[in-house]
Each structure stands twice: as C-alpha cells, then as structure tokens.
Amino acid sequence: GIQVEQSPPDLILQEGANSTLRCNFSDSVNNLQWFHQNPWGQLINLFYIPSGTKQNGRLSATTVATERYSLLYISSSQTTDSGVYFCAVDSNYQLIWGAGTKLIIKP
Amino acid sequence: NAGVTQTPKFQVLKTGQSMTLQCAQDMNHNSMYWYRQDPGMGLRLIYYSASEGTTDKGEVPNGYNVSRLNKREFSLRLESAAPSQTSVYFCASRETVAEAFFGQGTRLTVV
Image 1 (cartoon, rainbow over the protein chains, first blue to last red):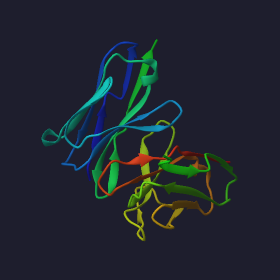
Image 2 (cartoon, rainbow over the protein chains, first blue to last red):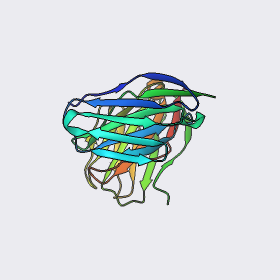
Image 3 (cartoon, rainbow over the protein chains, first blue to last red):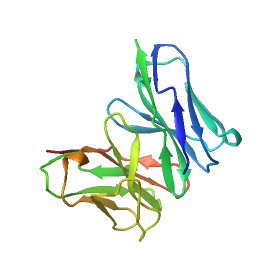
C-alpha cells in the first residue's frame, strides 16, 4: 500500500520564524490533505490540495503530484501554530496518514 | 453549521463494559470513518463506510463493531472494553474522494 512519510518529525522555532514541512508519498494519489492538530487534540483542516498551490493567510501548500510530495509553508510563526501537522493521502476510499510533524513555537 | 458531531466527548469505562460512540454528519456525505489515536501517534482506521449500507474493516478492527444507521449516522460499538482500547476516537465524513471533515473526538479511558 501507499507509504506516507513526513519530515522533520520535530521542529522547534522562535516566534516569527518561517518553516517548511514535507510530505512524501510512494504512489500517485487523487487526494492530499494537510491537518493541524492543536494542543487540545482538535483536528483542523488546513488544505485539500491534490495538486498545485494554495494559500490561506500565513500558510500555503504546494503539491507536486508527479514527484509525489507536498510542502506546507508557515510564515511568521505564532505560538498558536504549535501542535502536530499531519498530511493524509487517499487510497481505496481510505485516508493514509503520515506520522506527523510536531511543531513547537517558542515566544 | 454543525459538520460532524460526536457523542460523548469523554467516557470512562470499566473493563468488560460495553458502550456505543455516536457520530452524525449534516453535510450529506456518502463516506464515514472511525479512527483511533493513541498518545503521540497518528490516526489509525478502525472501520469505514464508503456509502450507506456498506461497512468495511480498516487497520485495527478487532474489538469493535459499527453500524451505518442511515446516511447521516455511523456508530462504533465496544462490546467488552479493554484497557488497550483507551484512546481518542475520531469520526470523519467526506464525499467519497474529497476533503474529509472530523468531529471533535471522544476521549475514552478503560480502567
């Protein structure tokens, strides 16, 4: 089945820094999503991005489907950006999840 | 605009007790899912329902049963709870191959 790998596993930054999170997947996919799980455990949809680039405020994402990776960019980090970022891809009606990147933003 | 609603939000069970986790969505989605998330881990699929009237096992189905009651509702039942089932349970829905939306989760502790 499809393998999804996220890097880095952990990231600690100062407030105001920029960051890039990566998601690699082992086969072609129809669907890719980025989620933010906040420290209270809530899963928040960030992007539904099977291909191309999308932007939402300080966050943007790019998926290059032909090269089987997606990037999530966070600019001017805030402490509220802390949490775990997951990517998930579609395979046979199921979402296959990466292990996540744990992001800590220090004030 | 409720989206996906899970009940209850918290539950403590004794080993051997049974319970049903409820999930309802108001987005008219065909597909619904149950996941569990253990501390420090990603989500693992328990069961899913690709459409009303169908259910299929996911990665970790043992110890669970599901019912797709109608298009809106998808319940998860623990017949005889075990401490290994202590976890956070998430329900999700989506339109077959499209963006998935998640409920707020149910924190279950089995003692």
